[in-house]
Image (cartoon, rainbow over all chains, first blue to last red; front, top):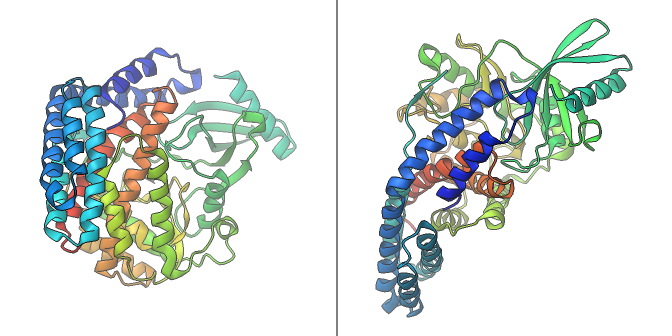
Length: 146
Length: 337
C-alpha cells in the first residue's frame, strides 16, 4: 500500500514546516490543517493495526497460493515460501516487501483460475479480497460539515 | 500577497482587456485538487469583476488538459448551472504555469465529500436538482459545441472500452504496490461488456457530492470541476455519483441526498433515457475502478511531489483503501467469472 505510514508522518511535518505564500494562508491553510489533522488521526489507526493487518494478509495469501499449488503449479507454493522467509522482517517496510511478492502471485493465480473457469476458487479469492480490504480499512470519523 | 502572482495577473489582464487592471483580494481556496484555485477581484476601468483562477500545479491529482476544462465550461454554461469561462493561457507565460480564468459565483458553499449530513433539511431539494441537472447534461447535444473540438466522440458500442482502457492504463502506469482487487475488477469488466450507450453524451467525469456549489437553502448555484469532461456513455456519471464513497455515512441515500430509486427516476425524466440495471451495474463497478485509478495517481503524485500535499495523501491513502472495500464488496457479489 502506498503511501506508507512514514511517508504520511513525514509529509505532515513538511506540510506544516514549509512556509506558505501569503495568498495561501487564509481559507486554504485552514482547510489544509484540517486535512493534516485527519491524516494524523488515520496514522494513529495505522500504527495501531497496520502490522497486524499485514501479517494476517501475508499469511492468508500464502495459504491461498499454497493450497492452489497442486492444481495450478508449484510456482505458487514457491512464492508463498519465499514471501514467508521475507516476512520474518516485521517492520512495515519488510512486511510490505513480502506482501508485494504475495500479491503478484495472487494476481497470477486468479488469472489462471479465470482461464480455467474455476468458479469456486475465483469466488474464494474474491472473498479473500473482501477480508483484506476490511482489515486494511481506515475509519473516517463522521466529521460535521462546517 | 505574492507579488509575482498578483503582478503576473495584472499584466495578463491589462493585456487581455487593453486597459489597466488591478488585482485585489487574491486568496487561494481549498478544493480542485488537480489545479491550484484562487479567488480574486479584478478592477478594470472602475468595474470590479469577481474571478476564479485555476492554475496548473507542479503535481496534481490527475493529469488533465486545462483547454478541455475551459471548453467544457464554455459548453455547459447556460445549459446547466456553471460559471462562464473568461480566458485561457496555455503557455503559462505571465503566471509560469498554464491557467484559465472564470467568473466567480459568490454566496455558496461546497462541503467536503467526507463530512456527515452536509445538506441537512435541504438534502432532498438539492438531490432532486442534482440528478435532474445530470439528466439535462445527458440530454444536451454535444455536436458543434466547444467541447467537441477537443473531445473525441466514441462510437456508442465503444464507450465502455475507451473508458476502461484509459483508466486501466493509469493504474498500469502509476501503481507502486500490486493491487489485485482492482485488477480483478478490470478483467471482469473486460469479459462482461455493457450494452452500447443509448446516446453518446457530455460526461462531466467527476459528478458527485463535493463538486457543486449550493446556496445553503436548497439551490445549486454551480456544478464545478469539469477537468475530466469527455464524451461517452452518460451512465458513467450516474455510476460515479452513486459510488458509496460519496454517501456521507448514509447508505440509504446516494450522495447523502436522495434514495437511489428517486435519483434514477429524476435522471430518466430529465435525460429522456432509461437506466438499464445491468448497464448501471457495469458502470458502477467501472467507476470503482476509475476511482482507484485516480487514488493510485494521487499516491504517486504525493511521493513525486515530496510528500507536501496532504490532499494527495488523503486521496492516495484513506480513499484508496475505502475504494478497495467498495471494489471487493462488488466483486464478492458477482456470480459468473
